[in-house]
Amino acid sequence: MLTVRSLSRPGLEPTSFELAAGECIALRGPSGAGKTLLLRALADLDPSAGEVLLDGTPREKIPAPTWRRRVGYVPAEPGWWSERLGDHFQDWNAQAGPARRLQVSPSAAERRVSQLSTGERQRLALLRALEHRPDVLLLDEPTGPLDEDSTAAVESMLREKRDNGLALFWVTHDKRQAERIADRQFWIDRGRLREALRDGTGREEAAPQR
Image (cartoon, helix red, strand yellow):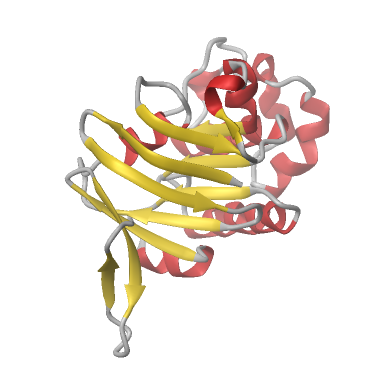
């Protein structure tokens, strides 16, 4: 379980929530509202205040490389440190099957990153994160540049990972996608996070944070 207590940083008001194993929280909100700021704070990529715990262990007691492996982060614009795609994977042969599922040819390992489409890079960044077998995966618009079929392939794979205990914190602008994938939905605006509940008419309303 990921436990967040009064997490804050510039642009993000104190935020608290829990994310259980196998659960998916979808986060929506307008551009510039603080979605990426929150993900980067959870991933320990930017300085922040408050507490973040994984299975009861405070983040500061977990070595940073271990934290970033167990709490994986797939940004909207993934970074690549080598021009050859295969250099980014520990065992590309083991990724051939998952790559096919995501409609990426296994031969992509020999290609240059600059030759890949935006959608291919996004799907391959997801595979790269999953290769480390994280406990929690932070996703910043993972299907934003994808077509309908590729989006369905990503959602299907992540649904299976959830069945095996992977927890997802998934940023999306697509309300219909949020309804498909999430157990709970959160809304953020001007750095204030709220859980989106439904009233008796089916309309969304924000629950105050405790």
